[in-house]
Length: 95
Image (cartoon, rainbow, N blue to C red; front, side):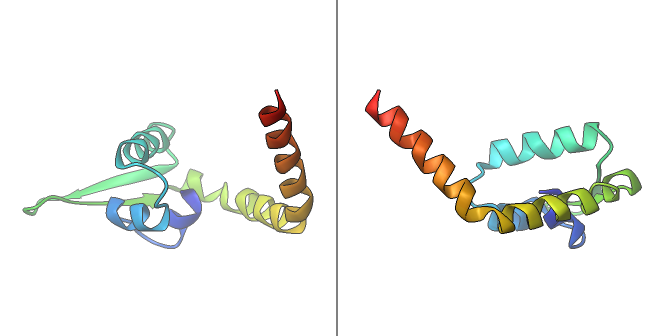
């Protein structure tokens, strides 16, 4: 979610489109948690219907290099990770 917010101000509906498997409730809970940890800021515009946008704080921006490196690591090790996950799923099914 932080990676997507890093792309620029994001409205909850935009994040929902980018993360379709996340329910609206979970998305809102995560945004609230990120806001509580001062990683994102929430701006509420005084219009009807209400408009809300999230953006990274300066502190939140410090995580982007870490997320980038983790993404590169995941891309590099995707095949191995897929094999590990499939093996674990097979073990669960067998039990």
